[in-house]
Amino acid sequence: DAGVIQSPRHEVTEMGQEVTLRCKPISGHDYLFWYRQTMMRGLELLIYFNNNVPIDDSGMPEDRFSAKMPNASFSTLKIQPSEPRDSAVYFCASSRERDNEQFFGPGTRLTVL
Amino acid sequence: GENVEQHPSTLSVQEGDSAVIKCTYSDSASNYFPWYKQELGKRPQLIIDIRSNVGEKKDQRIAVTLNKTAKHFSLHITETQPEDSAVYFCATHNAGNMLTFGGGTRLMVKP
Image (cartoon, rainbow over all chains, first blue to last red; front, side, top):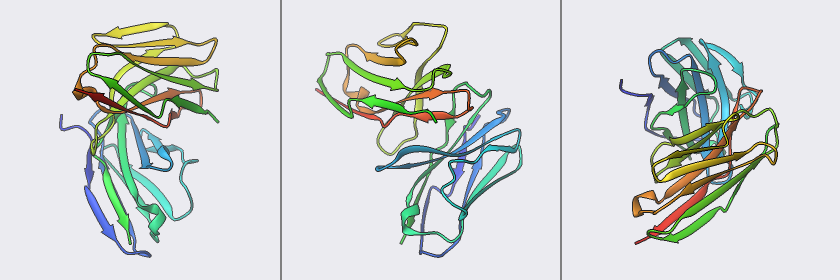
Protein backbone atom coordinates (compact mmCIF):
# COMPACT_ATOMS: atom_id res chain seq x y z
CA ASP A 1 0.00 0.00 0.00
CA ALA A 2 1.27 3.47 -0.83
CA GLY A 3 0.19 4.88 2.51
CA VAL A 4 -1.81 8.05 2.96
CA ILE A 5 -1.37 10.36 0.00
CA GLN A 6 -1.68 14.13 0.20
CA SER A 7 -1.50 16.80 -2.44
CA PRO A 8 -0.10 19.28 -3.01
CA ARG A 9 3.02 18.88 -0.85
CA HIS A 10 3.62 22.62 -0.86
CA GLU A 11 1.22 25.46 -1.54
CA VAL A 12 2.01 29.15 -1.62
CA THR A 13 -0.90 31.48 -2.13
CA GLU A 14 -1.95 35.04 -1.50
CA MET A 15 -4.32 36.17 1.17
CA GLY A 16 -7.93 35.94 0.03
CA GLN A 17 -7.40 33.05 -2.35
CA GLU A 18 -9.14 29.71 -2.05
CA VAL A 19 -6.97 26.76 -1.07
CA THR A 20 -7.92 23.10 -1.49
CA LEU A 21 -5.92 20.33 0.13
CA ARG A 22 -6.45 16.73 -0.90
CA CYS A 23 -6.09 13.39 0.82
CA LYS A 24 -6.36 9.74 -0.17
CA PRO A 25 -6.52 7.46 2.89
CA ILE A 26 -5.20 3.92 3.08
CA SER A 27 -7.62 1.51 1.47
CA GLY A 28 -9.82 -0.21 4.03
CA HIS A 29 -9.41 2.46 6.69
CA ASP A 30 -12.75 3.71 7.96
CA TYR A 31 -11.49 6.78 9.81
CA LEU A 32 -9.95 9.88 8.29
CA PHE A 33 -8.53 12.79 10.25
CA TRP A 34 -7.34 16.28 9.31
CA TYR A 35 -4.71 17.93 11.54
CA ARG A 36 -2.95 21.27 11.50
CA GLN A 37 0.57 21.67 12.91
CA THR A 38 2.16 24.97 13.89
CA MET A 39 4.99 25.87 16.23
CA MET A 40 2.66 27.86 18.44
CA ARG A 41 -0.25 25.45 18.72
CA GLY A 42 1.33 22.07 18.04
CA LEU A 43 -0.76 19.32 16.46
CA GLU A 44 -4.47 20.13 16.40
CA LEU A 45 -7.28 17.89 15.22
CA LEU A 46 -9.52 19.85 12.87
CA ILE A 47 -12.13 17.28 11.87
CA TYR A 48 -12.56 13.55 11.48
CA PHE A 49 -14.76 11.29 9.37
CA ASN A 50 -16.05 7.78 9.93
CA ASN A 51 -17.24 5.92 6.84
CA ASN A 52 -17.22 9.23 4.92
CA VAL A 53 -19.46 10.97 7.47
CA PRO A 54 -18.09 13.96 9.43
CA ILE A 55 -18.26 13.04 13.12
CA ASP A 56 -16.58 15.90 14.96
CA ASP A 57 -15.64 19.23 13.41
CA SER A 58 -15.22 21.13 16.68
CA GLY A 59 -11.59 21.74 15.85
CA MET A 60 -12.31 23.63 12.65
CA PRO A 61 -11.17 27.16 13.47
CA GLU A 62 -13.88 29.09 11.68
CA ASP A 63 -16.36 29.08 8.83
CA ARG A 64 -13.61 29.73 6.32
CA PHE A 65 -12.62 26.08 6.75
CA SER A 66 -14.67 23.24 5.30
CA ALA A 67 -13.99 19.55 4.71
CA LYS A 68 -15.67 16.91 2.62
CA MET A 69 -15.31 13.20 2.02
CA PRO A 70 -17.38 12.31 -1.06
CA ASN A 71 -16.19 8.69 -1.04
CA ALA A 72 -14.01 6.28 0.91
CA SER A 73 -10.87 7.14 -1.04
CA PHE A 74 -10.89 10.92 -1.16
CA SER A 75 -11.21 13.90 1.14
CA THR A 76 -10.65 17.63 0.76
CA LEU A 77 -9.98 20.45 3.18
CA LYS A 78 -10.83 23.85 1.80
CA ILE A 79 -9.96 27.29 3.10
CA GLN A 80 -11.84 30.21 1.59
CA PRO A 81 -10.70 32.93 1.87
CA SER A 82 -7.22 32.11 3.12
CA GLU A 83 -5.37 34.31 5.62
CA PRO A 84 -1.69 34.50 6.62
CA ARG A 85 -2.48 32.93 10.01
CA ASP A 86 -3.60 29.78 8.17
CA SER A 87 0.03 29.11 7.27
CA ALA A 88 0.88 25.70 8.72
CA VAL A 89 1.50 22.08 7.83
CA TYR A 90 -1.75 20.23 7.29
CA PHE A 91 -1.69 16.48 7.85
CA CYS A 92 -4.24 13.92 6.85
CA ALA A 93 -4.28 10.60 8.73
CA SER A 94 -6.32 7.43 8.52
CA SER A 95 -6.95 4.44 10.76
CA ARG A 96 -8.76 1.17 10.56
CA GLU A 97 -10.42 1.46 13.93
CA ARG A 98 -11.30 4.41 16.13
CA ASP A 99 -8.59 3.83 18.70
CA ASN A 100 -5.93 2.19 16.61
CA GLU A 101 -2.78 3.50 15.04
CA GLN A 102 -3.26 6.53 12.85
CA PHE A 103 -1.15 6.62 9.72
CA PHE A 104 -0.18 10.12 8.70
CA GLY A 105 0.31 11.43 5.19
CA PRO A 106 3.40 13.47 4.26
CA GLY A 107 1.58 16.73 4.93
CA THR A 108 0.92 19.87 2.92
CA ARG A 109 2.98 22.91 3.84
CA LEU A 110 0.73 25.92 3.27
CA THR A 111 2.08 29.44 3.11
CA VAL A 112 -0.37 32.31 2.80
CA LEU A 113 1.30 35.60 1.90
CA GLY B 1 -12.18 18.63 26.90
CA GLU B 2 -9.05 16.55 27.34
CA ASN B 3 -5.84 18.32 28.39
CA VAL B 4 -2.51 16.60 27.78
CA GLU B 5 0.63 18.05 29.36
CA GLN B 6 4.03 16.82 28.18
CA HIS B 7 7.42 17.38 29.83
CA PRO B 8 10.11 18.29 29.20
CA SER B 9 9.75 20.37 26.05
CA THR B 10 13.40 19.78 25.18
CA LEU B 11 15.75 17.04 26.30
CA SER B 12 19.42 16.66 25.53
CA VAL B 13 21.23 13.42 26.37
CA GLN B 14 24.56 11.82 25.59
CA GLU B 15 24.56 8.86 23.24
CA GLY B 16 24.05 5.68 25.23
CA ASP B 17 22.17 7.39 28.05
CA SER B 18 18.47 6.93 28.77
CA ALA B 19 15.73 9.44 28.02
CA VAL B 20 12.39 9.75 29.79
CA ILE B 21 9.43 11.82 28.63
CA LYS B 22 6.34 12.22 30.79
CA CYS B 23 2.73 13.08 30.04
CA THR B 24 -0.29 13.74 32.20
CA TYR B 25 -3.89 13.85 31.09
CA SER B 26 -7.19 14.96 32.54
CA ASP B 27 -9.91 12.72 31.12
CA SER B 28 -10.25 9.54 33.18
CA ALA B 29 -12.18 7.98 30.27
CA SER B 30 -9.06 7.99 28.08
CA ASN B 31 -8.26 4.42 27.09
CA TYR B 32 -5.55 4.47 24.44
CA PHE B 33 -2.14 6.12 24.74
CA PRO B 34 0.09 6.24 21.66
CA TRP B 35 3.52 7.82 21.24
CA TYR B 36 4.57 9.33 17.93
CA LYS B 37 8.00 10.26 16.66
CA GLN B 38 8.40 13.08 14.17
CA GLU B 39 11.72 13.67 12.47
CA LEU B 40 12.46 17.08 11.03
CA GLY B 41 10.28 17.77 8.01
CA LYS B 42 8.62 14.36 8.21
CA ARG B 43 5.27 13.01 9.27
CA PRO B 44 4.51 11.73 12.81
CA GLN B 45 4.89 7.96 13.04
CA LEU B 46 3.69 5.66 15.79
CA ILE B 47 6.51 4.08 17.77
CA ILE B 48 4.62 2.41 20.62
CA ASP B 49 1.19 2.47 22.22
CA ILE B 50 -0.47 1.19 25.35
CA ARG B 51 -4.05 0.55 26.33
CA SER B 52 -5.69 1.19 29.65
CA ASN B 53 -5.66 -2.45 30.72
CA VAL B 54 -1.86 -2.68 30.55
CA GLY B 55 0.61 -1.03 32.92
CA GLU B 56 3.79 -1.39 30.91
CA LYS B 57 4.82 -2.32 27.39
CA LYS B 58 8.28 -2.75 25.92
CA ASP B 59 9.60 -2.93 22.38
CA GLN B 60 13.38 -3.31 22.17
CA ARG B 61 14.88 -0.03 23.47
CA ILE B 62 11.52 1.67 23.93
CA ALA B 63 9.10 1.20 26.81
CA VAL B 64 5.94 2.94 27.94
CA THR B 65 4.42 2.89 31.43
CA LEU B 66 0.90 3.86 32.35
CA ASN B 67 -0.54 4.85 35.72
CA LYS B 68 -4.27 5.31 35.25
CA THR B 69 -4.86 6.23 38.88
CA ALA B 70 -2.46 9.14 38.64
CA LYS B 71 -3.38 9.81 34.99
CA HIS B 72 0.15 9.83 33.70
CA PHE B 73 2.21 7.81 31.27
CA SER B 74 5.85 7.89 30.29
CA LEU B 75 8.12 6.99 27.40
CA HIS B 76 11.51 5.46 28.19
CA ILE B 77 14.26 5.15 25.60
CA THR B 78 17.36 3.24 26.65
CA GLU B 79 20.80 3.23 25.01
CA THR B 80 19.92 6.31 22.98
CA GLN B 81 21.42 6.72 19.53
CA PRO B 82 21.78 9.82 17.32
CA GLU B 83 18.95 8.57 15.10
CA ASP B 84 16.63 8.82 18.10
CA SER B 85 16.89 12.62 17.78
CA ALA B 86 13.41 13.87 16.87
CA VAL B 87 10.27 15.38 18.36
CA TYR B 88 8.20 12.93 20.37
CA PHE B 89 4.47 13.39 20.97
CA CYS B 90 2.32 11.61 23.48
CA ALA B 91 -1.40 11.42 22.85
CA THR B 92 -4.57 10.17 24.46
CA HIS B 93 -7.73 8.81 22.93
CA ASN B 94 -10.78 9.50 25.04
CA ALA B 95 -14.49 8.83 25.00
CA GLY B 96 -14.95 11.82 22.73
CA ASN B 97 -13.37 9.76 19.96
CA MET B 98 -10.60 12.26 19.52
CA LEU B 99 -6.84 11.93 19.72
CA THR B 100 -5.39 14.79 21.78
CA PHE B 101 -1.66 15.39 21.47
CA GLY B 102 0.79 16.72 24.01
CA GLY B 103 2.96 19.70 23.10
CA GLY B 104 5.92 17.57 22.04
CA THR B 105 9.45 16.95 23.34
CA ARG B 106 12.47 17.73 21.21
CA LEU B 107 15.04 15.04 21.99
CA MET B 108 18.63 15.64 21.00
CA VAL B 109 21.11 12.79 21.32
CA LYS B 110 24.71 13.98 21.25
CA PRO B 111 27.24 11.58 19.76
